[in-house]
Each structure stands twice: as C-alpha cells, then as structure tokens.
Length: 290
Length: 136
Image (cartoon, rainbow over all chains, first blue to last red; front, side, top):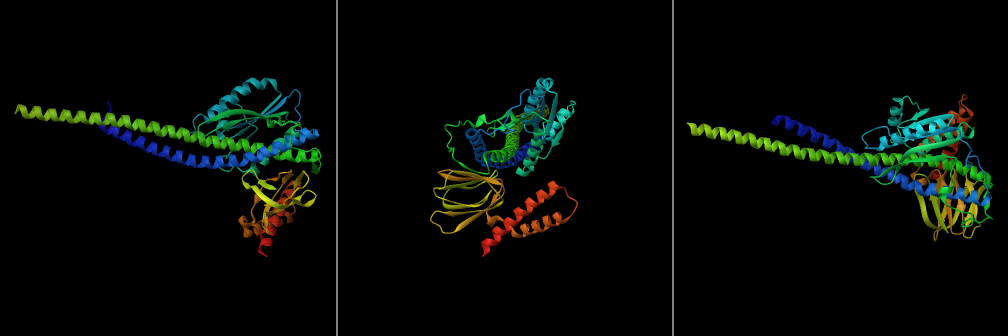
C-alpha cells in the first residue's frame, strides 16, 4: 500500500506532466492554425493551375513526357512523409505501417525501388529494419517554404525525365480536420489529370485562344510549376496533420492526466481520513482505559 | 472585368473590379482592357499594374514567374511570388542587389548558379524599381 507521502508525490508529478501537455497542446493549436491557413491559401492556386493544364491538354491534345503513363514501370521512387518528432498519436505509425506494407507488397515487382524519407521518424524506423532511404529530408515543420519544395521537385523531375524512375509515389497524411488525418498514397508522376474532371466539351476554354508562347511550351512550364506546387501541397498537408494529430494527442493526455489526478486525490483523501479515524480511535480508547 | 492574383502562399487580389491591367508578358508588356480576346501567356518577373474601377491611379504588384489567363469574365494571374511594393524593404533589396552582383563577379561559379543569381538579381532590381517608382 502506498503511503500518503508517496501519493502526494505522484499527484504533483502528474500535475507537472499535465502542465506540459497542456502547453504543448496550445503550441500545436497555434501552429496548426498557421499550417491550415497555408493550405487554404494554396488550394485556389493549385486548383487553378491544374485546371488550366487539363484545359490546354484537353483542347489542344498536348503530349508531354510528364503526362504519359509508362507501360510496365520497372523503377519506382517512393516518398514517405513523416514528422521529425513524436508525441503526435498515430500520425507517424499510420504512415510507417502503410509504407511497410506497401514496400513488402510492391518491392518484388520492381527492379529499382528507391525511397526518400521526409522526417526523422520514418527514416529511423526503417533504418532499424535495414531499409535505407536514398535521401532524408529533415526539419520540415520548421522551415517549409515553396522554394525548398520546388528544389525537391526539380530534382525528382530530373530523375524522372532521364528515365531513372518510371513512377513516383508518395505516402503522407492528408489533412482532413484537426482531429482527422488520413494516410494517402498518391502517384505524383506521371501527372494524373483525370482528377481535375474536365472534358473538352464543357471547358470554358475557347479553341481560338491566343497562346503566348505556344500550347506545348506553356504546358511544359505549367507542369513544372504544378509539380512543385503538388510537392508543396503534400508537405503542407503533412505538416498541418502533424500539428493536428499532436494537438488531439496532447488534449487526450491532458484529459487523462486530469482523471488520474482526480482518482489519486480520492485515494489520498480516503487514506488521510482513515489515518485520522485510526488516530482518534486510539486516543479515545486510550482515554477510556484511564 | 475581375482581377485575381494568386500565389501558393497568399491571395493578394481576389475578385477585384478593374478597368485595366498591364502585365509583363512573355512577349513584352501587355495592356488588357475590358473585352480583351481570350489569352494565355506566361509572365516574366516584373511589375503588374492595375487600375481599379472608378479610380485613376495605377496600383502595382511585383511578381516573379507566373502565368496569365484572360477569359471573358476575368483576368487570373497565378504567380510564384507576388508582393505589394509597400511591403518591400528597400534597404534589404539594395543589399541583395550588391550581394548578388558580388557573387556574379566572382569567377568560380557554375552555370546553374549564374542563372540562379541572375534571376535573383532581376527580381531584386524589379523590386527596387517598383518601390522607387512609387516615390515620385
């Protein structure tokens, strides 16, 4: 049986933990707001870009290496997006579990199977299982910028263009809301235009549209930007999800700590009362016997 | 005519009623007025100027690479960066210009670097132009 002093000590330690989790929750909430804002600002741009590419491609029948699906892909690049830090619920484990399954299933089908890890968590997990990434990108949550993403995009695109990879897949947490994040697997190269759901007939695009420069050059440039935007979007979603997941994880632990304190205070008071009663009984029986 | 200016990080102008937009297009400056033919063009680093409906003053936005879409209803500009000249800090821009010029003057840099610095230099110069042009 724990003594009064022990329980008192435990209560104060849980209280301290609760303070920390509460503070972490606040910090995540603030960061989440920022990350969320970034996504809402990005969406019209990303959508506008994709619509235009799809429009041009549909009305002018433009072929582009980044748009053509290669038959029998043999070389695959997988990008696994996790976070650098833990304490964010199932955020990382969900992605890792998915990626592990994916690797197990798909690896035998490909000649080359390279992985880029974004975030320390994923890289460390797979390192312990002897799966090494070709590259690891860290510090995402702190210094995510569009420039950084366009550099990554540029690099991946170059490797795709030279034929080093036939397909680029990405696994990340899609941001649904502060409490819901879904693990998604998307094919980012070749660029899939079907998602934009546009057909040539309905397009608001006139066929006699003036192009400066021509449609091919235009699609070429636009695809470049689209790909960079895509990478930026994925990373932004992941960062927002991370903060969301951490916020709800910390909220839960704050709540749990509260419950723990409550039940421990009850035990503490019971014990205290018991001790007082025993003492009183002792005094009274002592007095009676005199 | 409606003007929209979007970037990956912010919406600078949304649903603004304008009379005139002047853009640094691929083939030179373009002046777009009401009723312009549908057009798509890439945009160079430069200054976008627009006149709000009922106003006689031209507002400026500094942009880097982007593209422009003119349809019967609206003018949409999507750019990688877009800034209001009022947000630009002139001392920082001047510093950036002198630094990139120095880097370019150094002999041992790769061609890719030269291109990068030249782009940076151009951006800084355009920014400077936008700020100083406003002063007089």
